[in-house]
Image 1: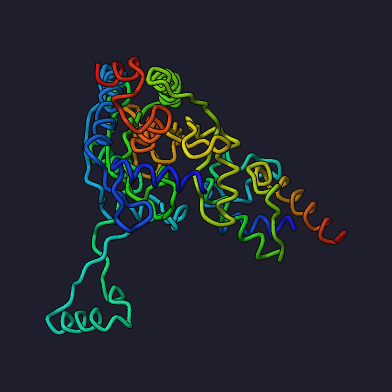
Image 2: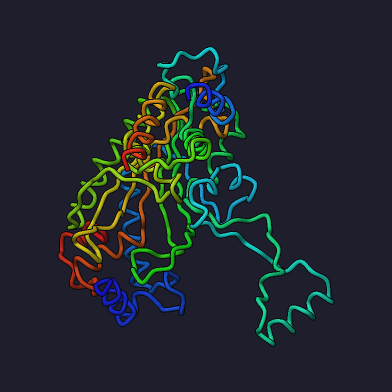
Length: 83
Length: 303
């Protein structure tokens, strides 16, 4: 999952630094993730993982770091399994 | 909705707004325009000492600037583009025939011009200022007013498709532009009080399009980027935004290359007055006959 997120971030994030240089907990907004790029990333993740973010998770916090995205995805996938 | 229709009907009956047959597209009477002119003088009185550079753009803007602004990413549903007939004489004959028969859409052959209807008064400003080079030390302040277009037909007289927006736009450091925004939130409340309008200020968001827009809405609200001054017009439960106070961070600065003297990217903020909405709030609160308005309101506006 971490690898896929990193690939999508590299492709859609429009970051000025290589994604390989980023720690999992690096603040993505601080390194230049724009609001619009975070939306692109959200749509890319939905497609790659075949899931849909619930409205409650469509916020800055869910995309604040690679670790935060992983955590959000795990939460969505778990609730999908439960359902 | 009933309250909206009945207020709209009363405005038509009183002749203040003039029905054109299209929802949200209205003529205005002299009395209506008098109120707008008086309120604009009040704005001048409050903000005139700040030394803003005044500019007036027509209600259409350069399509290239519109495209670069990213408006279509966020609000494709609201945009209006200007299209014209660009054919030859033969095309003209087919056009007339098509219009006469009326079976096909005669507008299908119209071609996009270089003009797009202005969606907010400040949109033509940013590229204009960027062309001047670095901003002066101490930042910059601008005074704008324009008719703006948003494609959202409605029976609510407070939601028009072509309406006027007066704006002050501030460019500078983060603290400079956020101080400007706070100053106008305080001024806005005082101004509305002085004309007898009850207001509240609340955090707000722009009407971003689609599911992706939901995320932009949440981001905007989480970061306190937009506030609105609300006044009840056609609903007490859902009062109407008559002013908005927007902090763009450095997004317009980055997009347009607006830089400060030291070369760093400028932050920007704007405060907008919805002039028709303010006039409607006044008519709704004080009645449709301006001669009957409370004396203190009349003297503030026309004194």
